[in-house]
Length: 327
Length: 91
Image 1: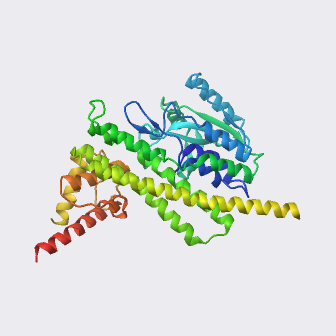
Image 2 (image 1 turned 180 degrees about the vertical axis):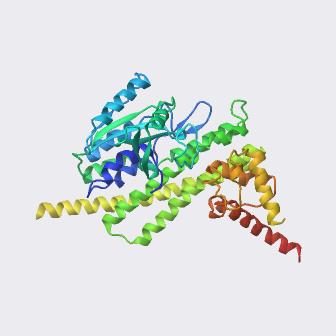
Image 3 (image 1 turned 120 degrees about the horizontal axis):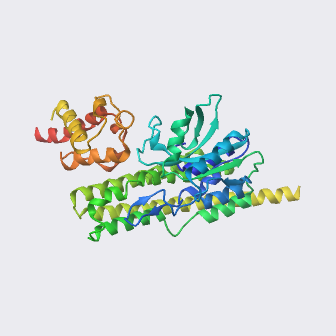
């Protein structure tokens, strides 16, 4: 799996390591996960207005694992680091220490987005060497040993503020009812928030106001690739329902192709917006609007296909429950 | 346009327009992401300059193509892009 959402990937690591536990339902919340549009019209995956409360609460409800937010924004960075050191010192094998750091401060780590700063959640463990820590980065499928000093420097960056601690020894399997409730909470059939936000940002920069020049569009949509890949979360949901229902592989692959088309569609929008920023050719606005409309139609189609498989899955759960009750 | 000229154009865009700090690693086999440290936006900027300044036609599906993995594969693609025009011109 490729990078989708660092908070989700980190907490999912414990689920993946538990035999028989399924992490895929948790990704329902990722396809339309929160993002922000800043006052200067810039789309961003990370801002002070975004918290992870939604994923926090649903993780606890789905898997019964209590997430403790150990990072306290009211305390100084050094106080928070002290707290983290104590958690690491006393950590048991089923326990996890998550921390946010600026990934761009660790250039030895391959970072295909090359964003600076790049606030990102990872998990840490002590090693036998006092000078080194073991870093798990499930979102990038990376793990390895790095210098403690360098990791601390990345944590100290002002762009990074956050940390969680959890114990996965009492993990539970999500019930069908909880999965149903989560799906119904996550699926938005009447809007595609990210596409709508991109449309608004382009409209804002095309309106001719001095504060939002056309030339600013490249910067405004710079983080679109980080957000676009969240749409791969649909694959997890299709895979989860498909497997339970025993549907054929071909049908699943066909949906994966549609999801891929959706993700790549954002690249085309970004490219056209960058071309508009570079050339000032307003004729491109029609091309962009056309592509945005295509994206909306495609994503609604994916959501509707997913809804159908969800309903079939729900029926299957109900009939299985009835069978169990009779027997 | 010869392959050498195309390589030179790519080189000049990266150096002058994108002001890439990793130009020392520039080579036909250099991977745009892993060796030249270009992110997806920088790759789009490169394609944009090839299209807007140099007149190459880049269809949408090429924006995420494997043809843009290395400097050499990008040059191959641009060479192929010239072929229909060259063939038309020879009629």
